[in-house]
Length: 450
Image (tube, rainbow, N blue to C red):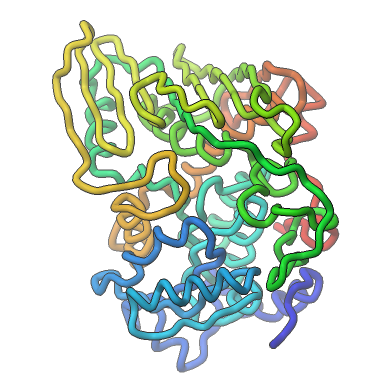
């Protein structure tokens, strides 16, 4: 098998591969490939990159006959993940996709039309722009970026290569959420002026990191990808990368606030804040391996006197608002409680006016992917590629919501606690220390080239 783990060697091959890019960003195709492209044949050839806990979100939309997709690759840096995914997909499809370790081998295959990028956070943006450079459409799981600069770059890549990029904030495809947000925009609760987004979970103690042998079957070099190199530490690759420093993860705010802050921003019709205030800390198992905050209160102030509040509790599952996660939108004439289970509409006196429960299912605070919203969101991505539907979460919208998460993290990491921002683009204006966290340090050779 070819070794494409080196970003430097890939750059050389990528330069050759992209010489045939047209003004629409499509690479030159062989006769075999041409028979598969949109217009010649409605079938989409898809690859999944990253086969962890979100895998369950893709079984149904890929297996659905109406989706008309062919799964060409299951790709992951861990051998056992590839084998597990292949075994699971046997329950849904009657053919065998190729199992692949190297992301680069997948995006170099001209038969691949689109990828689903479900890698860890530090791979989301680089994996997406490398795929787009090679003519692929991308469904990228949340958060779409590891830092604010990457969000801006993704928008630039989308515009330059004219490829479809959808972020995986699946509540944007919830029929109930779409219905009530449209009603809010039409004034059903008067002027919406504030939203409280929340998440409460009872995550437990995390093992302290110790230097350890790389687990059997794990390509640790490729897992690190764009992040600076370090020795492997026990239990990093399997989810705990979320809490082990900032090389790979974006803490709970990037991990879960992305969803709820997106609903809040959607409802209030706001883009970039002018001020961010944060109070956060680590309050549980003070000596365990969790290296960032586990509790955060954040306030985002916007023009027109609109406010979003974030209440995030990773390791205290107290039910503050009547559900583990959701968003409450306050208006001059009423309020709305909306979550993945549906919504409740109240008048100004707090009397229930309308109650709509989702007919589908989607996990709340439990680990794992899958459910009707995810299915509809992935199908919307496929239809967006074909030009049959408007994307529910195009990257320019997804990046705005993720920026709120990054700004909250930067306020915490910098110790500033209060950031002033340019309301036209969200850029930090009051702190040199905070500004330094707008981007990240990349492993040499992995820096974005646009």
